[in-house]
Image (cartoon, one colour):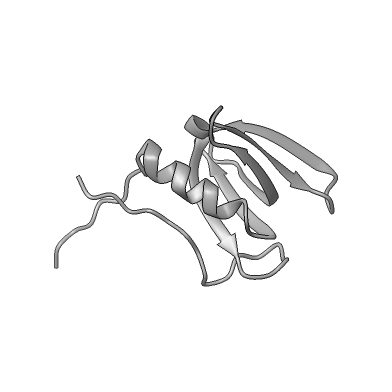
Length: 92
């Protein structure tokens, strides 16, 4: 069986993921630090920056594209992601 290597999406792919994620009501961002945050996002593609807002936990987190490792779009407002995800797999 062939081994697959999953790496961080390229910058252009991450922009696409974040652009799609800003339309979703609830997303999960995984950061390079290993931290996972959930909420709704605002993303400015021209600056490459965004903000994740979680009103339940009363948190707001500013991020840069370079900090984001993975983006998951949740199909419904919940703290648990569901099957519908946007993930990029890049084979080198």
